[in-house]
Structures are given as structure tokens and as C-alpha cells.
Amino acid sequence: MKVLRIISSMAPKTGGPCQGIRNSIPRLQELGVENEVVCLDDPESDYGVVDDFQIYKLGNGKTGYQYHSRLVEWLVQNLGNYSHVLVHGLWQFPNYAVYKAIKKLKDKGKDVPNVAIMPHGMLDPYFQRATERRFKALRNEFVWRITEKKAINNADALFFTCEEELRLAKTTFKGYQPKKEINVGYGIQKPPQYSREFSDALYKKLPNLTNDYWLFLSRIHPKKGVDLLISAYKDLAKTRASLPALVIAGPLESDYAIEMIKLAGNHPNIHFPGMLVKEEKWEAFYNCEAFVLPSHQENFGIAVVEAMACRKPVLISDQVNIWREIQQGGAGLVFNDTVKGTHTALENFLELTSEARIAMGELAHNAYITHFSIEKAAQRMRDQLHLVLQKPK
Image 1: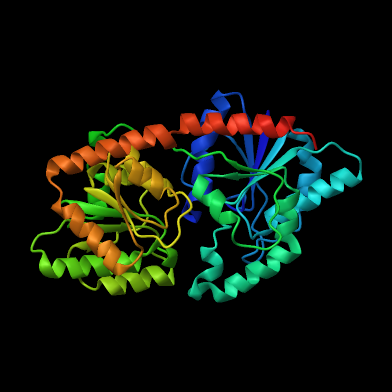
Image 2: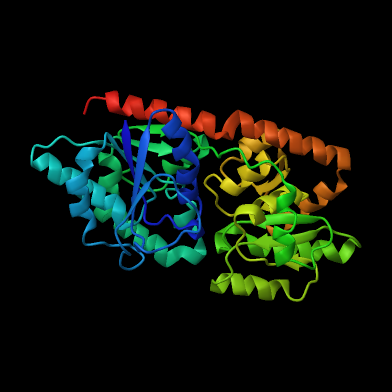
């Protein structure tokens, strides 16, 4: 079995889907599933990570839609080398390019690979209802009618990362009629064992970080609820003489990130170290008191699961699609995506004894093993790819 993954970018700063690819491919290779990736990054781009699989970088696409004049022809010429195509993400040209390439090959009487699409939460109704996304919602409605509906309904299957994502996808657009919907799950690799080599990486970036801290680690983006976290933390600090620090880790180049730094003001216990990678990231996870994500929409939350794998309690909103697994496993606290909900969760966590927090961290690790280990996720992915392959066209 040989799979071609298609994604707009493999740059780590673009978020979860490319990290999910990096998590799953090594384990799938061990299971006999060969994987290659084609993306629309500059051929000279340096991701800052070592990838032990083939990545074809075709050059940057145009506009936010990522139109690329060579992509369809590249696919027509190369799809015959693969048994499966797995498209990651929606609303950009690569998804429609696969549909066009498959149609061209069929018109020529050629054999075609099986096609599955992973929406990665991009069919969530949040994106069509959020008031700050009105223009993008109209754009998505237009793209849905012109191209996306064709791509989705003609794919052999849609792969979802959790049951909640699959359920929500049914509610967003008219004419949504995929051939098959499959919850394949999602997982992460086991984190590196804690090492003393980690001990200086984070603190070199944050020399003033001397006490315990809560960690937010993700893109600093409006949907992540960073404003809720900062506001709740500042409110809590007014009535609590001693609080863990708050570390908000993520790229700082966006206008929203700058706005959040201004919202934090000069609060001495709110820190913005920028994006954390490698040893910095794992040190941040291993040394935090808890991981916090008050997101307005989160399909899976790789960083949430990374924290769980490091035996850390997770405090997440009920808009993170894996909240049920968290709540049922006792792995953390679940709250509404409001300032009040975030404030209450932080306060409730403070009320826990040290022993209770440690126990919650152990339950978080158990939930990771049960639901989100890469071994189980890769096995499910392989099994479902086999089923799609056997499905008559």
C-alpha cells in the first residue's frame, strides 16, 4: 500500500494537520504503509525539523486559496504510483485539484487510486456561524457550491479524527452527501522521556519565569480563546495573592498576537515566549502545572493530547471536540468558552490538592493511552485504508 498525502503546507507554524502527518507516517511505515507528501511550499523552504519521508514541494500557491497552475498536471502524471490519496484540509485548491485530476484520468480510461479526505474540523458549523467570520463564511458557501461539494461527494470516504467532528460535519452545508464517513481517530507519538537536557531550553527564553505556571501552547488566533484566558487570569489575580504564572506560547507575528500582548499589559506573570519547538516545547509541557485551551472551536487539539501524554491535567472548553473523552476519563476540567467559564475552571483547579492534581495527570496519561496513542491511531488508519481499497467503485 502506498499513500500520497496532499496538503497546502508542511510548515510547522501552520498548525495541527501537518503535525498529524508527521506523527502518523513513521508508525504507518512500520505497519507496511508507505507514505509520501506533496505540498505547495517553496522548494528551498526549511521546516526546522527532519522528515524521514519524501516531500514534494511544488512551490507556493497563489492567494489564500493556494491556486497552483502545475498541481493538477503533477497529479495526473503521478497518481498512478499510489494506491491511495489522502487529502488534508478543505477550502483550498489542492482538494479540488485531486477531483479534477481523478476526473481526467477516468476520462482517459486510466486506473485511479482511492481518494479519502480528512477535513480536520473544517466542516465544523462554527466557521459558518462565527460573527467575525462573516466574509469567510460567504466565501466558503461560494466555494462549497462551485468546487468543494463535488470533491467531498465524489471522494471514496471522509476520514474524521473523532466522533464529534463526524457528527458536526453533517450539520453545516446543504448537499453534503459523502459516500462514506469514517471515524479513524487520531493520535500522537509518545513524547520524549524527560531529560535534564530540557532544563535550560525554556528558561533561556523566559529568564523571569521562576515559579509554577499554566501553559497555553498553540497558534495565537481568535478561535483559540486567548483573550478569554488572559482576561480570566487577570481577574483571578485580583483576588489571589499567589498564582502560577501564565505562559502563552505561539507565533507572535500576527496582528491578533500583538493585540493579546497589549491585553496582557505589563502583568509580570503573563509571558509570551513565542513559538516553542523541540526541547523548549517538551520542557514547557513537562514542567507546567496544567495545560489550558479555552478554544471556541478545536477539531482535535494535538497540543492537548501532548500535554496528556506528559501526565498533565488539561483544562479545555467544551468546544474542543475531544472534550467527552477528557471528561469521561477524569483527565481534566471542561468548561464553557467564556471568560466566566475559564475563570471558574482556573479557580476550581486551584482548589484541588496537590495529590488530586497529580492523580488527574495520571488519568490524563491513561486517557491518552486508551484513545490517542499513535499505535492505535495508525492501526485504525491502516485498517480503514484497506477497507476503502476493497470497496467497489
